[in-house]
Image (cartoon, rainbow, N blue to C red; front, top):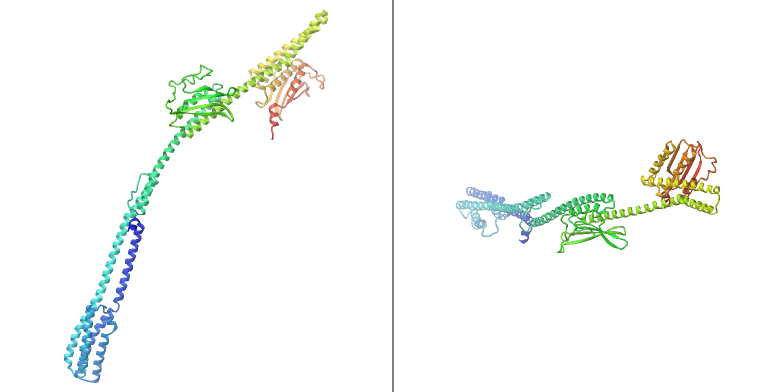
Amino acid sequence: MKLLQRSLVARITASLLAISAMALVSIAVTMGVAGSSQGDAAAINLAGSLRMNTYQVVAALQRHDRAPSAAHHRDVEALAGRFAERLASAELTGALPEAEDHPLQTQYRRLASRWDETLAPAISAALAGEAAIAPLNRRLEGLVDEIDRLVTLLEQNSEAKIRLLSALQILFLALTAVVVAIALYDIRYNLVRPLHQLVVLAREAGRRNFRHRSRLAGSDELALLGRTLDTMAAELGASYAALEERVSRKKQELARSNEAMQILHDGSRALYGGGNDLCASAAPMLRRLETLLDIGPIGLSLHDPFDQREVPILATHSRSRPTYCRDHDCHACLIDPEPLALAENGDSECLLLPVSVGETLLGTLEVWYDRKAGLTDSTRRLLNTLTDQLATAVYLQRRIEEEQQVTLMNERTIIARELHDSLAQSLSYLKMQVARLERMQAKEAPRETQAPVFDELRTGLDSAYRQLRELLTTFRLRLEGPGLSSALRQTTLEFSERLGFPVELFFDVPPHLLNPNEEIHVLQVVREALANVHKHARAHWAAVTVRFTEARLEVMVEDDGIGLEDDSSPPMHYGLVIMRDRADTLSGDFQVRNRDAGGTLVSLGFTPQTARLITQQPA
């Protein structure tokens, strides 16, 4: 019974087995009753024939009584023997019930006893002439009543079997109907309705409504499945709500991260374009990140590589300036009316992030935040990105300062070398001439002897003054216009005014190809060549060509003047000597020759330092 209470399948199986069993029992009973009814009709017919046989015996006796003869005697004996044979036949006795006290069995015994004990002997006596036939006929007619009673009992017995069969069929039909009704009720209330509730639960779960419950009672499979699905729906609802909350938080974090990335992008433009003012460029970005990420205050300290200490240079929401603040007109750290105060109860915690490039520590970023709220992974990644940007900005700022210092030193070196190669040599020559003049005056040499010395002093002073003007002009060009192209353009404009016709300029050089030293040498060679055109060429056209081809820089200054007297050995003028020295300094080739179309060609070719560095790299 417990199994039937706990299992719907068991109940349905039991119902099917009960229906099947009742059907089998009904079939078996029907077959049994039908089997027991076999021969009833034959017995009734046979019993009815006994009645006819009795009348035949009576008629034969009457014929024998009217006309006794052997034939009539044999007819009576034959009919009496047939009656006895039919009375004792198996067809009739086999249809009788086995119970001895059954009315049918009692009537049969009475009939057989009356025939065997009374009538059969009486017939024999009448045939022998020992008894009258008329009383015997009346007794035989009374036997017919006994036979009719036997036939009636046989019919009643057969009808009783049929009624029993009908009753059994009705009983089994009723029992089957009851079992089917119980099974249908069980299926309706314990299978169909729970299945409908489970389908509704599944449909609602498919619509993301996890609040619906089946609430199935009982202990069968569907009830267990319903309770399991209810538990699963509750867990799914909780998980889905948690996931929705996580998605909402992730969306908020993503939106905040996007806004933070936009702040970092805007801040990077300010950092990389703000020059040396790191406070004014970084402080607004840090303050916006504090408001967005709910952190702060934030402090930035730079690492001093010389004395290995951290120097605070920036602090948001600060009540005072950093110790080493260099600009008291800057209020980047002090613009908040209500600076943040760190909690005294230990609710704030500090996160130290290194500001470094590779293995080089540039500084430290100090970030304060609420200990209870903590820092999310996205916030930590954004802070790491912030430190990378600050490190890049600080590193670039230091590199720019180093490059400026190196450039300044290179400029000073170039100026010193130019002064040494030109003006210093002229002054040394003048100093030697002055010493020579002093010795001549000490020896009281005649004025005619001293006159050549005065001429050389005058020529040397003129040359020194000219060289000084050239240097000043060169350095003014270099300072006023960045790049070789601008300096050459101004040089050609200057000499165009001095020559009285335009000097053409053809410039085809990629940017940042030459270092400052190479630019100065090229510019000085061009100026010296144009100065020679102005002094000696008597030209009407001049052109300057500077181009970069096949990893070499080619410089050519051409004119259509009178040219050189001897193309194989140009004159050893002082300016030509300086140009050859500059070409040797650049490890280049220098030529001065006559042009085929007339005039002079001054050419300089060399490989720039940057190109040599590129070609020297391993393939």
